[in-house]
Amino acid sequence: MDKRVRGNLPNAAWALLLALSLGRLPARAGLMDLFTSKEQLGQELLVDSSYDYIDGMKNAIKSGADVNAIVTRTGRTALMTAAAKGFPDAVRLLIAEHANVNVSDVFGRTALLDACQEGRAEVVKILLDAGADFRASSNTGETALALAASTGSVATIQALIAAGADVNASDRDGWRPLMFAVMHGHAAAVKALIAAGADVAASTSDKGTTAMTIARRMDWREIEAILEKAAAKKGAAVKPEKRPGGR
Image (tube, rainbow, N blue to C red; front, side, top):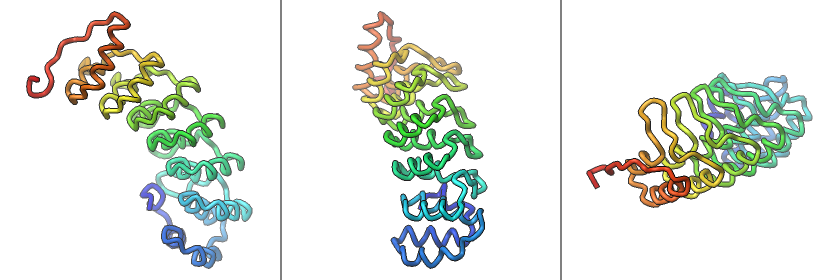
């Protein structure tokens, strides 16, 4: 079960979540009599969206569920849940029913940020087409592109850049998407970011760390070569630095 969904749900919603997780649709049908208020219908919608149960979602909406209902203490919505799980049909249904694509939870996370962190490229494209803000950041400064770079999803990275995301945007410490891609060893993502104009010489504001610094410390030889080639094309010098162990 998704911890982001199950946290703080009441007993009836817990039972519904368990029934769906076990594939017990008849049990789910029996539980529906417990969901009568608008808040309870919102809980039903949230749970159904976490399992891509489209018929259940439609029934909840038809019965009066608010697609923007916030039914957990962390502020999760059905759209956030469906986006994080990578369910395109559920996301489309919620958007068609006027779900707010830019609402955030208590951590400042939006549906787009969740989808980017999980590398859900198709869902990311749907959200962007619906007006999701690619400039939004979480309470800790995470941006959509930085999360996509950390995950290594090239399709997600390209979708965000095509929508207008700044490939060189930095967080409060000066970390950029390229640095996150390097740190996690995603060579294909590194290439995609460089092709889109990522600055290979950029450094963090705290310790002056560059993408090359990270690559050498992590001993990512393939990524080192990619960065060196990119730097050479731009006529930039690469600062010599020993790898861990003096190699």
